[in-house]
View 1 (cartoon, one colour):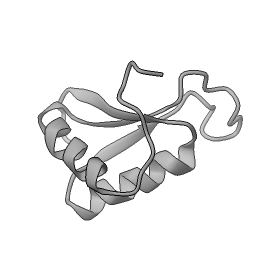
View 2 (view 1 turned 180 degrees about the horizontal axis):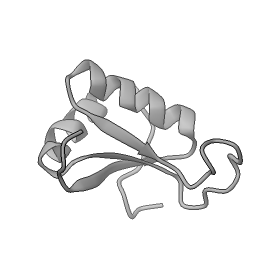
View 3 (view 1 turned 90 degrees about the horizontal axis):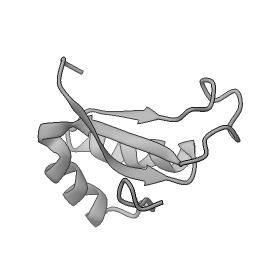
Length: 80
């Protein structure tokens, strides 16, 4: 990813769901980053507020459209 402001496009209950959504975005050419406070997946129970999927701020609308049309389960940031 280039230097750009990142924004959370969705929050997932676990890293696997977030990575599946990341794959959906990747298939549409949208770069994303999975963000979880779980010590690099060593302690999966550490994240309290869910696993965030981040995209460039300018890609938020496109990413939300892709996730809405795919079978991914996440919530909008700030709704957990």
